[in-house]
Length: 83
Length: 185
Image (cartoon, rainbow over all chains, first blue to last red):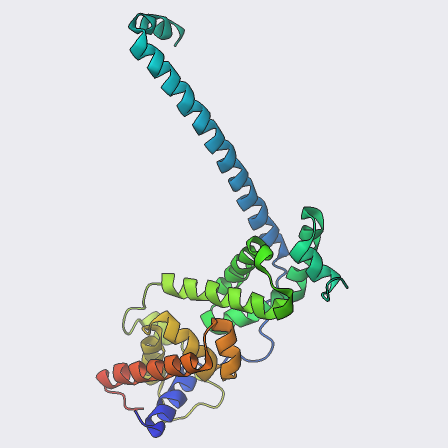
């Protein structure tokens, strides 16, 4: 592709997609939407952290009870009674 | 002024959680319009540009510890915004060829060449839309918006030579696509 071809494509492109003119800033104040995003993401992160803490606790409890049930099968009816 | 940077930038960079939040809000109000305008030039969609402005500032909020005050906030924010816009372009499905909706959206510029019909403009816009996003973004900024290559390189985080190469490849692919459709630029 020579310089002439390149300029032809450039001109056509500018005709098809003219540049955004002037000060293209949004008239809308985006801070309320930003605040909402920050609050939502931070809440979600806090909840995920809390959930992962509970998941570890639940897993450990389940593993402990499973271990007791394997070692002492007679304890199974007791667990079932308390369910 | 602390460590050679303004109080707002210092608080954003090194401040306590409370002063950081205040500084972030101040920087948001100060740079929101510029970041939005920059993103709009890339994505050419006002609704998406608003969404991406918020996404960019979210990334800025998360990455504040990596901020380098020596390089300034504006350039850093612009680079993050460019990457957010690039991610958005990558996630967009390619327009189907000759979509009439898109054709109708392609308006003539103020100084339109009468030889270039609305159909040619629409086909060119669609062909441009089919280019890989990395090439499209470089061509948008350097060719359509006619920004200095140094500025484009800084925003994309690449060298000026890489910008020139991407623009060249974009124009070559665009020309081939147009030729397949019977349009000789």
